[in-house]
Image 1 (cartoon, rainbow, N blue to C red):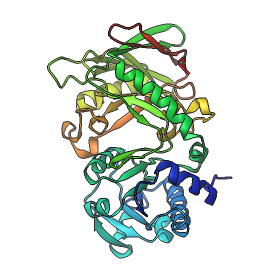
Image 2: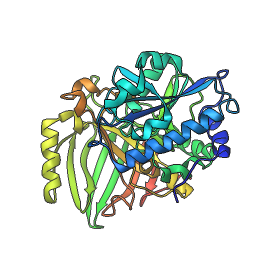
Image 3: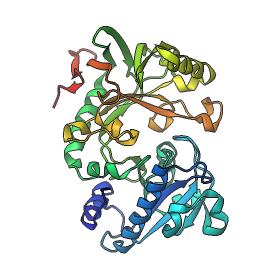
Image 4: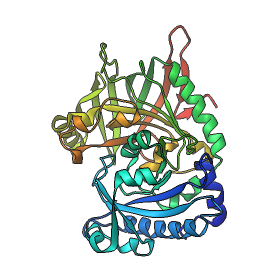
Amino acid sequence: MAQRLTQKDWLRLIPAVFPPIDKDPALAVLLDVPHDAEEDTDAWKARRTLVAEWVKQLKKMASSLHLSKVELIAYASVGSNNADLPETAYSVDSQIISSLYASDFGRSGVPVHFSDVFSRFALFLAPTQFSATAPLKNAARTFGFRAATMPGFASSMIPALRIDYGRVNERVEQIKQLLDQAECAWVHFSVDEQMRYEMQFDLRNRTAHVSSGRFPERGTAGNLPSGEAYIVPYEGEGEDESRTTGILPVQFGAQVVFYRIEKNRARGAQGEGTRALTEDQLLRREPAYGNIAELGFGVLADFGIEPIGEVLLDEKLGFHVAFGRSDHFGGFVGIGQFSSPQAVVHIDRIYIPALQPRVVVESIDLVCENKDPVRLIEKGNYTIF
């Protein structure tokens, strides 16, 4: 049976995610919809049905949650994760959202410019098909709202909304402090318990971020469910070249691809089967895809949360490395460095046994100037908690 959020869950969750700082703020639930039935999927339709239930619940509970209003704002799918949002969105009736397509907006929605939406609402929940984290992070800094982005959300993620995010925050803050002090991270991998590979990630000129599922300050946005600390490796935008280098193994299905990393970019890919060739061709066609955009450290596995096959949750379970766009995290690779807005990506490769059983993170050491290295992870497990 599918999980559902109860009234008790909402009364705990909304104040925990958005600690009160405004008097009776307005909340928008932001949702992308497919252009037509051909683009739709069962999971996407199920999410729209779930969101319709959420909006109905939240509207009934608005006064109890000290919200001035709750509104559903829909927009046409942008087709890829972290691409810019369209200029126009639509205020729509939640009762029709499960069967609504973008082609219906003309007769079933009230058009509104996104800049007006961002000005009118102080809080956002964004359970979208394609991640809106990057554009909402950037817009939050400009308009001062707070947003919890929930790309790919499914009812199977609801248990992760019920954990103690105070304890989660303590852990990710501890990792952040270590990352802030580090000049580099040395990561040692093994493949099939035989082959050994290493990566040096350049962490100079950067500070880390925490994604704890709490947004106590205006102008902030991030994932929910959450539970990670993350940092953008130095991308070589200054006078020095990036020192991020090595061989990064990633398992896709049964095949392992080995990326050759130089100066924080994947310059080529080799490995087994057809996936290596596909990845190598993509790197040649779209060099910005090869940017090492994030080093992430999820902690939710220690809270009993298991992977479900959705990146939003799975990346919060353990160590992960992202390729592509980084400007929304404080890096320098953005939309302008891709061939088109549709080509923009931020893709996480997650190193947990359920997703990459052939690849093991043997160790991660953080190297700090004038200090002994800190062993952060050994055999895939944190050593500091």
